[in-house]
Amino acid sequence: MSSIVQHIRQSLSWKLGLGILLMAVPISLLSLGILFVQSRNILKKEAMEHANSVLNATMQSLNRYMDIVETATDVNDWEVTENLQPDSLLGYSRYIVMLNGQIDGCSISMEPDMFPKYGRYFSVYTVREPDTVTTVIEEKYEYFDKVWYKTPRQQEKPSWVVYYDESDSLALTLDGMIASYSKPLYKDKRFVGVISTDLSLTRLSKMITSADSLLPYPDAYYMMIGEDGRYLLTPDSCLLFTHTIFDDANPKTNADIFALGYEMTNGKQGNMRVFLNGKPCLVSYQPVQGTKWSLALVCPDRSILMSYNRLGNIIVVIIIAGMLMTLLLCSVSVRQAILPINKLTGRLHRISAGQYDEQIPRSIHNDVVGRLQNSFATMQESLNRHVSDIQQMNAEAEIRNEELAKASELAREADRQKSLFIQNVSHQIRTPLNIIMGFAQVLKESNGLMPEEESSSITDMMRYNAQMLNRMVLMLFDSSARGTMEELYADRNDVVSCNEVATECIEYTYKLFPGLDIKFITDVPDDFSITTSHLYLMRSIRELLYNSAKYSDGKNITVWVTEMGSNVQFVVQDTGPGIEEDEVGRLFEFFAKVNDISEGLGLGLPLARRHIRNFGGDLFFDLDYKDGCRFIIELPKK
Image (tube, rainbow, N blue to C red):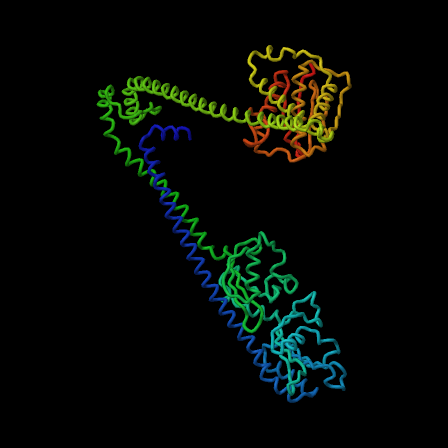
C-alpha cells in the first residue's frame, strides 16, 4: 500500500488524474443526488396517488356494503311501524336478515311498556349463524341505555354506531364487535322504538383486506377509527376497541400521530407522512360516508421505496466502477500531455537569476513539475534576501508608528482623566465645606439662642462633614505619595492585635453613623497579633465599614476575624442591594465610580487594596455571597 502511495506522489499523471476525478466526482454526485431526490419525490407522489386510488376503491366497496344495510332497514321501517304487533316484529326482523346475505343481525326494540303483556321490555333479535338464521325474543335487560338504542333516540335520526355485543364473550373473541345501523321508529309522530341492523366488524374487516388488489404494497394495511380515535379496524387485534390512536403517543415526539388523529376524528380527507411503530409511513385517509368513522390506508415507506433502494445499490456499484475507469483514463492522458515539460527545464535554469514573478517554495517531490518548481525557487532566493530586508524595515517603522499612536492616545486619555478628577475633587470638597460654612454662619447668627437639640444636630453634621473632608484629604495624600515601598510604609513592623484593631474600626464607624448596628465575630484569641502597619490596616478596614454603612441597609453589618491556614482574614459583610455584576470588574480601579455625580473620589477601595498588597496580603470581593457585599482582607500571620 505504501509503495502505491509513493508512486502516486511521484507521478504527475496520477496526481492530475486524481485532481480531475475530484473535480468531476462532486459534479457527478450532485447531479445523481438531484436525480435521486427528484426520482424519490416522483415515486412518493405516485405512491400517494396510487394509495388514494386504492382507498377510493375500497371506500366505494365499503359504501356499497353499508348502503345495502341502510336500504334494507329503510324500506322496512314503515311496515314495522304500521304493524306494531309482537309476532309481526319477529317476522320483520327475520325477513330483513333472510333476504340480505350481508346482514349479520337485526333487532327491533320497543319503548317501555309498549306491550303490557310482555312487561316493560320487549326486543326481538335475529342473528345469522353459520348454517341457520335464528329469531328470538330477547331476555329482559335494560337496553334503553345501549348506544344502538340511545343514540338514534337522542339524535332523532338514523346513525351508525359501533359497540361490543355483551351477549358474546367479548374479552376472548372478536365476533362480539358490531357495527350497527340504528333508526328510530315513529308512530303518529311519537317515538316507539328502534330498528337496528348489525354487521360483524370482523367480517367487514375481512371484506376490506381479503382482496390483494385492494392493497397497493405487500406491507400496506387498512386502519379505521371512530370519532374518539378508538380503533375499529387494525391488523393488531389487541388494539380494537380498547385503544385509541392517541394512546402511547408522546405529544412532543409523536406530534405527527396527534395531527393524523385530529384530522381523522374531525372528518378530514387527505394524505400525511407519519411514524407509526417507529417506521415512516404514508397514510391516506378519508371519512366513511354517513358515519363519524374514518378509514385510512397505511403504506410503509420501506415497501414504497423497495425498488428504488435496489436501484440505488446498483447505481452505487456503477459509480465506483466508473470512477476507477475515469482515474485510469485520466492518468494515461495526462502522462502523454506532460512530456513536453521536460524540454523546458534546462531553459528555465538560464533565466533563474532574473525572474521574480511570485514566491515559489521548494518542492519535496522529484517529478518534472517538482524540478521546475525548485528551479524557480533558486532564482528567487537572491530576491528574497533583498525583499526581506525591505519588509523588516517597513515592519519596524510600522511598529514605531503604532507605539507613537498609542502614546498619543494615552496622553489624551490621561489629560481627560486629569480634568475629570480635578472636577470631581472640587465638587466633593466644595460640598462638605459649604455645609460646614453654612452651619457655622447659622450658629454665629443664633447668638446662643438656638435650642440645644438643634445646636447639637448642627454640630454633629459639621463634625461628620469635617471627617469626610479629612478622609478625602488622606486618600488624596495616599494616592499622590511618591517613593519606594519602604519609604511609604516605614511603620509596617507594628505588632497589631487583630481583635483590637477590628474593635477600633467599629468604634470609629459608630462615630460617623451613630445609629448603626455592627456585629463583631472573632475566631482568634484577644492576644492574637500580626506584624503589619497599624495605621494602614485600620484605614483599610474603616473604608470597608464606611462603604457597608453607607450603601447597605445598615442593619446586618458583620465584622469577622478568622484564621485560614497561614493567613488571617478580616471579613466585612452586609445585607443590601449589593453590586451589579457588570460593576464588579471596576471595583478596584482608581477613580472608577458608578457615575460622575455619585459621592466619593473612586480612591477608597483601590487604595485599600494597594495598602494590603504591599503588606504581602490581598483584598478581594467575594463573588459567592449574594445577600449583599462581602469584602475579605487576607494577611499573612508572619
